[in-house]
Length: 253
Length: 125
Image (cartoon, rainbow over all chains, first blue to last red):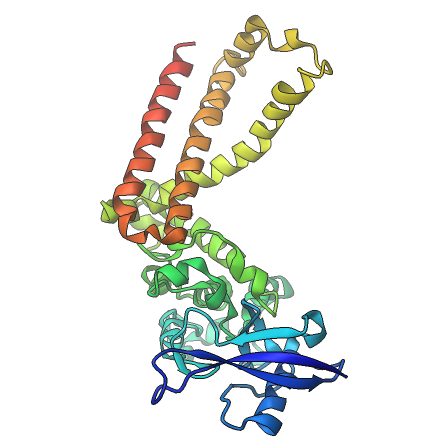
């Protein structure tokens, strides 16, 4: 048991013009994660503190916050890694709704825009020929799964958006998680939607806005490595561009 | 200006990527040899005499590919684009997004002029 000063960013849109800081003295157990301290404040000290959390096991992606200025999944971040004073703020690069809760709409819209589902050229009913004869499913080898599995581990915690210097400067930038997700579906052997997704995240002013700071991959709690996905997407665009020079209509049709 | 920059993104990125490759692999060795090993006497300075360097730069592969000139041109041209693109990205990250059209064009312009001069110099060997 050790006492720590937890500094929480408070913001009530009805009363405050801008966010302010409030300090709480919290008796912390050695085994606590940062989220445990915030939950303690909410339960035992000040019930007006607002924050998001759910699973406490780094699966739901709800409890992302800035801890001493770095985006962290607070349920996965040991409190013992920090000194006596821990500064907890809402995720950077997002509008604040209240206290530690940020606005998700813009992010969700970006996420949806890359069409993160399997697109088949034909309707599935007409597509029986490519189904696995016994299981009535699309077959996929371990290698084909391995091509994209890493990029499918994203839990939508948005830490990469808080860390990304391009998102900070250009709020319209599609961002690491959304590009990685679009790339994940492009890599899926069952998917035929790469062309449909081209303008969304590989066209002009999209993926090349990334300035390869690599911060997204540094902060990712699930080791998704969005920076690698973005660079692979860039390379794919270059190949398509080169094909377009040589083949009619880029050799796509 | 920015519209043009967006159009040529894939080409710039390709040059940039190759510039990183060449820059990190070959220039590191160059700095090691010329900056450290020769001054420390670990490599004989005559290894980089004009005759030897010129012979290397003008060597041909199978009598048809001017491999020396190609490598030298790549070594001079690609890092220019790598540098221009890196500086442009850095300036955007530090808040220069609004001036990106003009600044980016200037940086790529410098890289383009440098490339032409480098290629002319290499061809004239």
